Length: 194
Image (cartoon, rainbow, N blue to C red; front, side, top):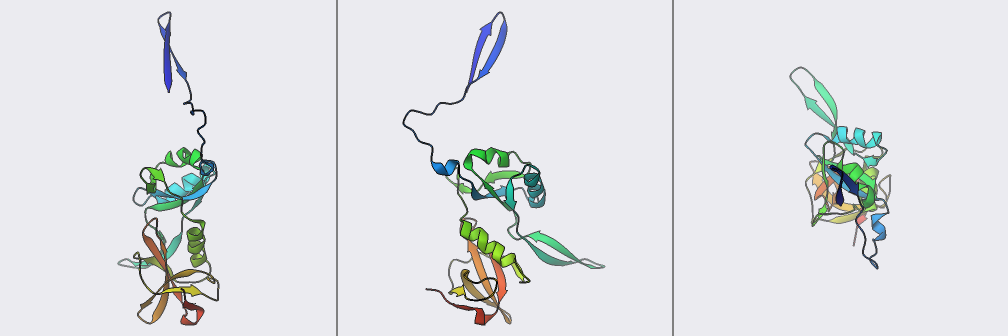
């Protein structure tokens, strides 16, 4: 809120902070850091991540390797697993620090309020990226045969099973983004999840 006062022909602008009504409490989640999905402009994910790191904002950009064939050669590229999104860990109090980064459009949420991404979802994506698994984006799945992984680096992870050609893939979905990621898995490593 701004206040102006005039004295001797000059205008002085005084900045005042908005007051919180007595008895009103600010929720603790406003001060605690959580993971949020920052929606970015097209193809700006890597640049946004670099800017976040320069500003000391904890961020996570999951990448997968893609082979593109051009006329004269093949090229291996690191592509975002969730195009258009970078995950940031901030408190709501510090969200402006993220929104000021060039290329960031908004924090994903409902009714104009950013919604935290569950820590379990971030850890599930990180687990998929660890090791030499074939990770790639997958269309969003809501229904399917749910399983729990029993062994290997993905032990404890839950998701849905999809068969593609001769391989079995575990699909892990992030409901907030309505996006999924799939990772190749051996059929002996999982059991049905109830």
